[in-house]
Image 1 (cartoon, each protein chain N blue to C red):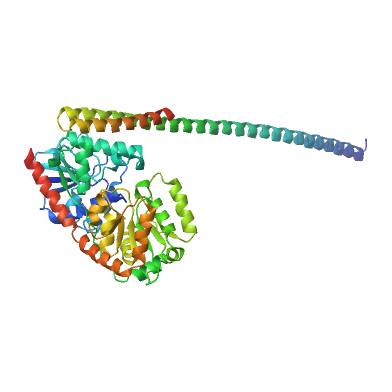
Image 2: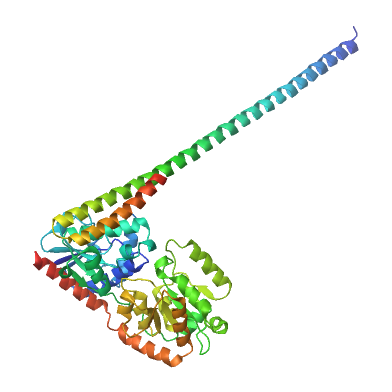
Length: 119
Length: 378
């Protein structure tokens, strides 16, 4: 084999190797991009789920907050009814005033109960 | 005798805040050196101590950065057990009496509309005010009502014995007085005119049902179109509750050029607005006192207001009092006064004299007398 022939063969081998390498790199790039898209989609899905869970937790916290407020109102109305009883027994509230205040307190209680049920 | 004053709500923009600022300033000027102590009671944890301190400094007439602040400011602390001694009374200014406080208290009652006009209040407000009043009644506190109307309602609605109620009337702040140059300042700041043939009808108040602004808008619509155009409404105030429909109506009236919203002016700006107004109208359905009435009178502005309850009591014969539930009656009074400058002038003069009968110095004197009486009672 002449030196020219050897050089030609070496050149062809190098070109074939480079071609194979380039083709491999293209295939690898495609696989990586596909994998990245899969990962991105997975991340988006996880983020969406996390966001929905956070929103649901917020709604639950708001609902609990409203319920606590409603229960606190009911407790304060009960305290008012207790004060009317104590005031009447101690002679600090006249019986007719105590009955009128009791009716007002029971109206407050009915409204506070409706709020509590709505919460 | 030692008076411990709860200043927890001194920064409030409502009547409770202005009552606290006026009374604390007068108490500081009137009382002996160590007989008044300020305390910061904040049951809801909503107030900022720095803002309270700054507002207090202003009420006491000094700079918050003064090198040597007033001893009253230096001693500002939270209420504690030492304030429950036998010679001490708590001045409860915020509708609340701390449940753990075992000492004597002077409980300020502003109005009882949470019982007489419940539809005008939020549920929380009705609960808070009734709870406070009952705690005070059960503890046998001395009630300080801001008008005879409120004093009478404490007896009839809560059943407090009349001997446990005293009347302490508020007063306009120093800014509310005749204001030379007010018309020019109002024209420059708000674009409102105050001429011989045109002007504005001023209304002041938070945007809540009790202030009855709907009837005022109805009454203004009943005025002849030319008169209503020359004398539009100007409304100062904000906040409030249960006002969604009212807000929409105010916007529509403003768009039609019959109303100007002024926001929340400072005392100085509000005094200018009173002084330059053609009329001040206060159509509130019920008040504990109605401080804007005497503020307007002090600035020399003729007043139209309701003919019952505290507004009638405070106005005396120095305002045109009408049935404010009737838009027709209110419109007739407005028209009569708008078309009669002499009648407005006479009303303004009587109002100015009437306003001079309300002073914070007298209110502070009465509070200190009540505290001495309470100490002597037990």
